[in-house]
Structure formats: structure tokens, C-alpha cells
Image (cartoon, rainbow, N blue to C red; front, side, top):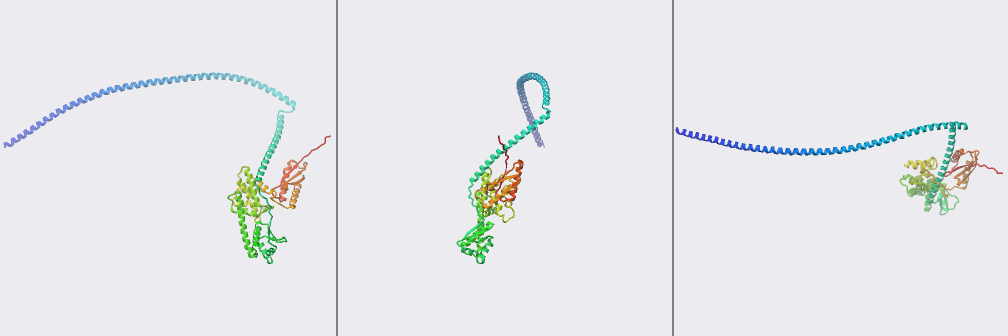
Length: 517
């Protein structure tokens, strides 16, 4: 049992030694740690002391820098204040100088005002004196003249008004004469230049056609057995065949030129072919009608291309071609229309206007004559309806409507077409009429003009395009002349048929004579 106790004691001794060792180690570590802590605290105190010293020194530096900045700002502020004070002083001196100047000017103005007031008082006194003198003079004038001031004023104003009215009338007449002379001169130049630029050959055309025959035997063949051939031709074409004693010729008579042309072409073909019987006649007439239709279309296109006019309706082109076979007083209407178009376009160009519309209106102005034998109404109204139907412009329609004066011409184009139409119809050789009708027309014109009261004599001149009417001055006064001219024109329009227009001139002449003894 003693062995285990010794072991226990040994173990206890070991444990006690170990505990003591541990305690000693702990104490040693504690002392070491305390030393380290102490040294660390000293180091920390040293660092803190160094930091405090550094902060104090930095603080002093910052304070010094701040004081320097404040001192610098203060010096700059004081300098700026001093500069501003100087500026203010300069402005105060300037304002003071201006005030002194204004005071001097105000003193001068007051002195001038005093002088003006003094002069005004003198003027008022003199004006009153003048008014007194004027009043006395007026009273003296009224006594001398026997008129009051108002009466004298009215008399002077009436005299002045009469003088001004007379002078105004004289000036107006002078200006009218001057403008008329200039306008006439310019119009003559334009018309003469237009005519010179258009060299158109004039050939009068008849309203009948003559077909030559190779021999008189052909007349019998054309008549046929019991007249069946000639009846067939007349029935199919609507043309009268006149077979008289004229050798080797047949005359075709028809008021409608297209039908007459169809008959002429058909008859020439039959004569050249030699086979003349009703069936052949019918076939030949149909071919001739197609040929004439093609010719009509070709003539219309030629006229349009020749004038350089575009966008005309195809039906209007065909109607223009029909005018190739229409005459007016022996003048071919298509050639007349082309000539009018050229003249109107040339005059428009001379006036500085666009000639396109003038040419178009001139070409279409007689378009109504192409179907005037088929449609009722004047060729003017028919032409207006056709132009409106085929969408022509209002300018062209108005020119067609006004080219014979049926309505008043309101555009320059309409006036140019009127002038060109008159020029084309009046050119030598353009139209013809027999001598008997010509003489009768002139006699009738003079009779119409002489039928009015107060007319002494009348003379038809310029181939009946002008009539000069001499009136009795004691019967027809100046104010009656214009209405008389209008009445004569109206009677001429109602009773006479004539191409173009007729100018009526009323002449009133007063004469006074005496003898020196």
C-alpha cells in the first residue's frame, strides 16, 4: 500500500512543480508585458507630444498666413475704395460743371424769353394797328366799289373759276390732240410694218366651178340616157350641172363649196376614166368625198402648223380646212383667216405683247363660216358657240364675238383682230364685187347719210369705207354732231350690207365774210 502513496506524492509533487512553474511563467510574462506596455505608453506619449508640437507649429504658420491674406485683402480693398472715391469725385465735378452750364443756359433762355415776350407785345400792338388800318381801307374800298367784302370775294371766285375752267378745257384739248397724233402715228407705223412683213398673194375666187371637157361628145355621156347620169351626179352631190353652149366645159353651181368641190373632183375622175354610169358615179363620188375630207384635214393642219399654233381641237382643225372652200366677196376665207392671224400676231409683237393668243384668235375669228349654211345664226354667234364647245380661252371667244363690233371690244387681242380683219378685207384685190352693185351701194350710202335733217351734202369716199357728211351750221349745233353721227351709223347698219366697217365723219363749218370799202 505504500507504493501507491509514494506515486501519489510524486504525482502531487510533479503537479505542484508544474503549477509553480506555470505561476512563475505567468508572472514572468506579466512582468514582461508590463514592461512592454510601459514602453509603448511612453512611445505613445512621445508621439502625442510630437504631434502636439507639430500642430502648434502648423497652427502658428496658418495664423501667420491668414494674417498676411487679411492684410493683403485689406490693402487691395482700401486701394479699390480709393479709386472709386476718385471716380465719384470726378463725376461729382462733372455733374457740378453740367449744372453750372445748365444754369447759364437757363439764364440765357430766360433773357431770350423776355426779349421774345417784349417783341410779341410790340407785334400785337402793331397787328392791332394794322387791323385798324385794314378795316378802314376795307370800308373805304366798299364805299368806292359799291360791293361788300363777301360780294367782292364771290365775284373774284366766280371770275377765277371761269378762267380755270377755260384753261382746263384748253389743256385737255391740247393733251387729247397730242395723244391722238402720237397714237395715230404709232398705229400707222405698226400697221404699215405688219402689212410689209406679210406679203400675201390675193386671188379672187368664184362661187362656181368649171370643169373642162376633152370634147363636146363627153357632154352627152355625162347627161346619159334620158339624163340618168346627170341626175345621179346632181342627186349624190347636191350640185347643179349647167351644160350650155359653152364649148368643152361644164359649169358646177352650188352655194355650198365643199359639195361643189366633191362634184368637181368626181366629175374629173369620171371624165378621165371614161366609164360613166350610175353605179360608177356613186362609187366615184364616194371616193371624191373621202379625198376632199382628207384635203380639208390637210389644209387645216397646214394652217395650224404654218402659224405655229398648238393644242387646237381636231374638230376645229377640220372646220378650218372647210374654210378652204368658203369665199367672202371672192376672198378665200381660210387664206383670209391665216392673213388675219399673221397681222394680229405681228401687231401684238410690235406692241410688246404675246402674239400666240392674237394669232389663235385671228385664225379662228371666222370659224363660224365653215358651217353657217348648216346651222342657224350669224357666223359670229356660230363661231362663239364652236369656240366655247371646244374649250377655247375667254380671250379668243371674246375676240371672235367682237371682231365685227357685235359687242364692245374689251381686250387688246379683240381690238387687234378687228384691225387685222379690216386690213385683210380692205387690201387691193382681196375682195371684189361687180360695178353695178358697187355703184348702187355707194349711192345708197350717200342717200342714207343725206336723209337726216340739217345735212347739206354727203360724199362716199375710199370705196365706200368712209362717208363725209357736211351739215348746216345754223341747224346742227356742236353738241348735236356726235348724236347725229351715231344715228347715221345705226341707219347704215340697219339698211346696208357691206364688208368691213364704214367711218362716218360729220363736218360743221361756219364762215363769216365782209367787204372793206
